[in-house]
Amino acid sequence: MNRSFSVFAGVASIALALVLSTPISSSAQISPSDQISAPANISAPVKISHKMSTAKINARAQMSTAAKQKQPHRLAVQVDVNDPAVMNLALNNVSNAAQYYSELGQKVEIELVAFGPGLHMLRDDTSPVKARIKSMSETMPNLTFAACGNTRENMTRAEAKDIPIIPQAKVVKSGVIRLMELQERGWSYLRP
Picture 1: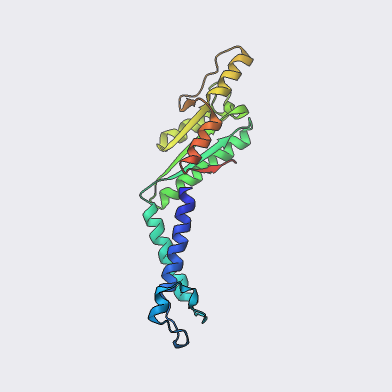
Picture 2 (picture 1 turned 90 degrees about the vertical axis):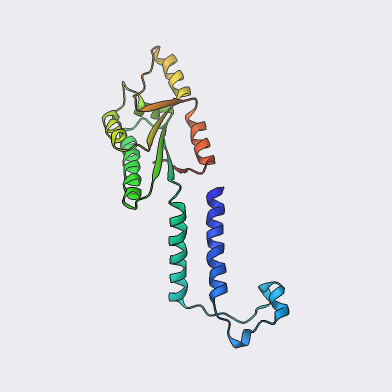
């Protein structure tokens, strides 16, 4: 909801700046009494130079981006299938996002949440990508992995053994709830 409001506020700011900076032709003079009432009383078309409006929009976008740089970007990635191709795709997405924002000099926090059959990605005994996860964790301090505790408990019962989780992952009560909570805090969501 915060991002939606921010986008709306940004668009409204741009529109207001364009309206306030656009000269009004002599055929559309506004009397002092009209200035107090709603601006809907202006009926003459207002011409806006394309170059001028594009420059103002670009300037506003740059200011908006600069203001947001203080808060890191946040990405929640879901893995819920036991498929090495999907697991590698998720890690590629994570790596690409981290590299993109690093090149811009901006921070990004990324959390990959695995549940259901996707928990195999974070299992120490079955993960086809655990070496890659270890390597990425060493070079990306803002990358975290969350393993679903509910799935782990179900696998423990089904397999009649303790399910080991890789050391780079933390166990959360529920992977689905973890994703919900991250999204409620404004994190962007990705399911490769």
